[in-house]
Image (cartoon, rainbow over the protein chains, first blue to last red):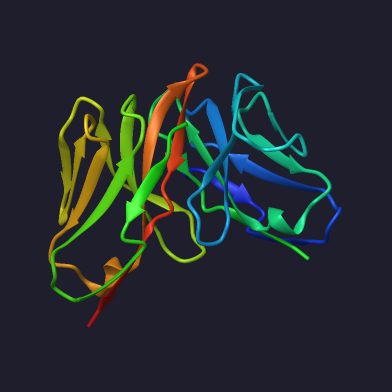
Length: 111
Length: 114
């Protein structure tokens, strides 16, 4: 079992660009959540996908959007990037409301 | 709104010491509580998960306790080692919108020195 995988590992973008991050859940998991972790902070919940729909959302602007595919993998899209979007983006997966398992993260740097 | 606070923010101890990390939360209506370890620039490694009905969980040199009524949890690390150096994050888990959501503290950065 490969666990939760994320790609890419690192990404550098400039302000105003758009970015797509990808996540493959742990085998058997049907739910994917995304978190943003700024330097020196704890992760902040962005949103959660289940059955290809956004089930709940944290306090993030509409520039942050996502998608879940029939194979349960997920994408996080961020439009009109700001310097403040620089962070480690973590994906977590789980089955029903069971324990969430985290991936290694994608480090996004916005210049 | 649930808020999670961790004290201290940073801690430096000599090898072999026993230590306690603290976590407090404002809303006691939690589903469970987790402690994670994070190495610099890396993802999260789950250490212990305590169900809301439990008082504590143990794994090796780690012991976590939970007092829901007072909104507190502690992580006890026995006989600390340099390999324990990392950031330790506490997260409360709530059920919402048909799923679950984690709210994290800002972490305690631990350094264990030789």
